[in-house]
Image (cartoon, rainbow, N blue to C red; front, top):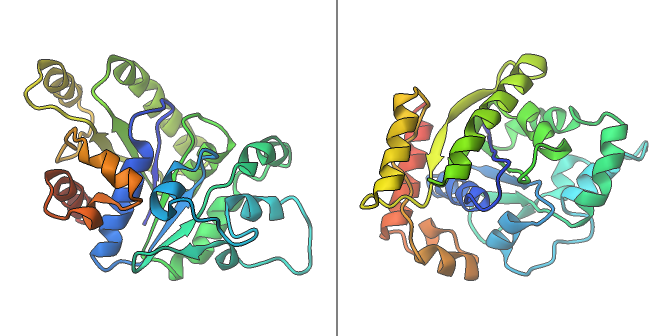
Length: 256
């Protein structure tokens, strides 16, 4: 299974959701690869702290190789590193991703990620992809490479306005490049069940027929500690309500 977490709006918890669901998958015994394609590298920092990846063992090294024809091309496994968590591996982000993007676009390399992930399918049970908050080369490459798409929704008016555009973008990729791609569902983040606005917004999504996933993810200050300590919630405090919500959300996804 190859899942991409996609939203063009920043600050909706995209990296947090990707890391924690990938961690939940690894904790359940699945062998997992997480790709961080966002030059900001939030998912990478979340998993590794300030650790510097080995030379070229990151996403910029992987994509940079596509621009250089060589008889001795490095296998994709050379760019992947283990994390401190059993069965969870990482293709880390790197700031050079931003510099590489116009060159990759000019050379029409948008399908290379899909080719690579298909080659890695026998190495991993699941692949999770974190994307930049923009519909750019890396996001399109991820949508072409994935067969499931999750959309974070943070109960905000701007997120609601952007949702139809997100669905249209995913539908266009599916129609033009990747018929396998399915919208697996909307992940409600920062949910406050006692506040009227989030409850109303989520109900409106359901009434409109959008696939809202269960359970919603609660708002919690504990997630800040999780970020600071570079420990996904399922490892930091498995009994915490939010950790259990991530675990249950993953279990629900795994049944599909």
